[in-house]
Length: 292
Image 1 (cartoon, rainbow, N blue to C red):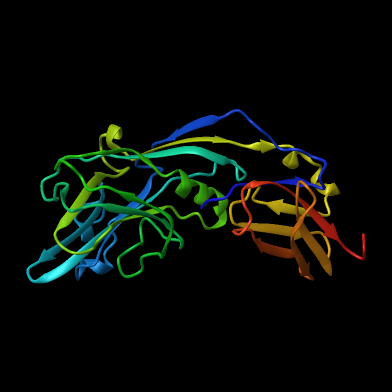
Image 2: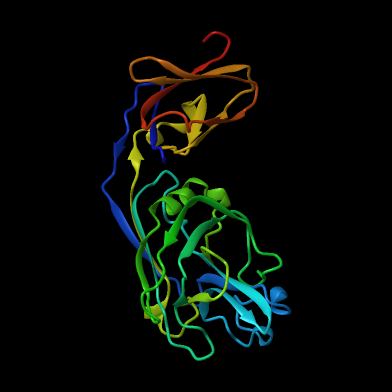
């Protein structure tokens, strides 16, 4: 279960939410980042992110397939990354919808087979111009999205709910590397094909609609007067603290009614606290050093 835990600094500042903001992202050829990777030799070492002679200029699609060429099976996966830098790091994602558009293109499969799709968060860096099957990034199954199989050979997938995935990307902004598309069951025969940001028709480019809000109060405190900083706020699983001085410290997580839920001893200026076992709510943080 995802948890949203709000923290009050020194129990004197309450969190209030801004009004909701909605943004639509639909990158084009110049600012889009997407690719597909192919396990079939010799293409397992070929990049299909940017147009070049080695990939026969096949960069205007995002594909996910499992097929057989001759007697050898092959697998295709798609990669897509949106620039989320305009979304505040402390944003609470209310809703995020991803739309992917089919387009007719001879030489590519239609939406075919038992092609239910997994959308996973990419956890390693990758380059649109360099990614291949052989150097593909790792992915995380946390909050992965399962998309049902298509019901037509030309189906687009509109408004797929990726709210939790986008929240994960915002919360882990340092390691925000986008999304990977792969067949839920990578056994032949099945496939999906979507237009990429390089497609000449901008109405077919991948689209992401994000509605979010942000808490105020904590982030308005004068940073120079803090003994420590906490982020992300709100937090879902892992809380990070940066302390002004070396320890030893005692760090306590306290419920509104005063119950101490966590007590951590630390000598480090950077601390991570796992809060997965704490239910969603509003909590306090208390820091002790030298009994103060």
